[in-house]
Image (cartoon, rainbow, N blue to C red; front, side, top):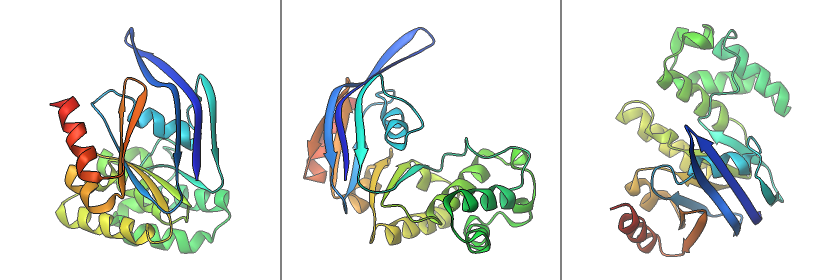
Length: 217
C-alpha cells in the first residue's frame, strides 16, 4: 500500500510553473495495477519520482508498507564510465541480491550483446532504457513505478517487455505512466487522471480512458 497525504509540489521550468500536487491525498492498494494518465506536462513523471523518493515534495507525506522501485527504465543513476555489466553488478550489491544472477538475467533480457561490456556513456537512449528496464525487472519490488518503458525497442522487444512486466504483476503492484491507452486496457485494473494537481479516480478503466481523452482532446 502507498499512501499520499496532503501532498504539495510545484516546479518551475523555463520560467513556467507547473503544479504537480495540490494537497493531493490518495491510497494505492497492494496487488493493483493503476494507470496514471493526464495531459503532457501535468506532472505524472514528477509524481512517480516523488513516490520513488528521488524528488522531494514541497509538503505532505508519502508512506508505504512495502518496497518501491525507482521509476522503471530510469537510467540517471548509472555511472557513465562503468560498463552495463559493472553498473548491474553495483546495483545488485546495493540491493543485496546475487550479483552474477542479476547480471546474467539483464544481459540475456536486454539483448545488448557486446555493448553490455562497454561503457554506459557509449549507449544510445534505447540501449540505456533496455538496460534500465532489465535491471528494474531483475529485482523484486512490491510496487513497480513504470514510465513509458515498454515502448522501447522493436515490436518483438516490446512484446517481450510487456510479457515480463505482466509476469512481475502476478506478485506485485504497479503505477504505470504511458501514452498507450491500449496498454492501459491490457494491464491496468483502474485509472487515475492527474490534472491541475488533483487526481480523479476511476475503477472502470474504460471510463477513466474516456475522461482522459475528454481533457486532452
